[in-house]
View 1 (spheres, rainbow, N blue to C red):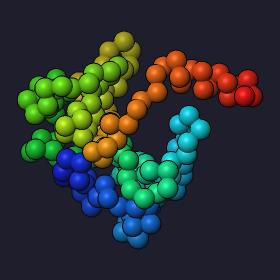
View 2 (cartoon, rainbow, N blue to C red; view 1 turned 90 degrees about the vertical axis):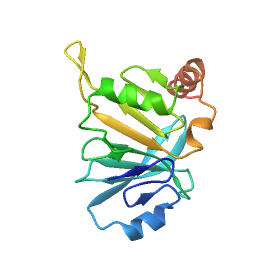
View 3 (cartoon, rainbow, N blue to C red; view 1 turned 180 degrees about the vertical axis):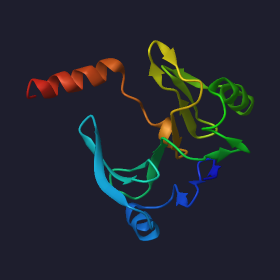
View 4 (tube, helix red, strand yellow; view 1 turned 135 degrees about the vertical axis):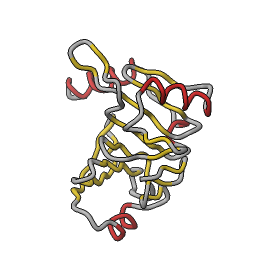
Length: 159
């Protein structure tokens, strides 16, 4: 699948609504919901392709796409078949403000995140998961760690 920054991943267009995509796909899928801090987001999981598509709360457009296998091509690079260290180098040439977190990095400019698996005290050489997001996804206010902890502690206490 070819990824076009903030536009599409193969036949999946970030402007697709939940209903648009359901009418378009011709593969086995499961509908579901992803919850984050009390907000539910509709999802479609494409079973054979290991692709999770997460929509805005109202299903009007795609927030992000997670993929765990396959051929994903970006700027002529096969993301799953290129070493993580090489991807970090190549993506940083396109975006000099990568955001690093445990196991990977995000590029707001390129609209993608690349993550490795951690097993037996070591990170994998090749990416294990990719995330592709719409242009507004990273501009949302991210709750602080304290806000997340307080939300879930309050929920656990029945508040």
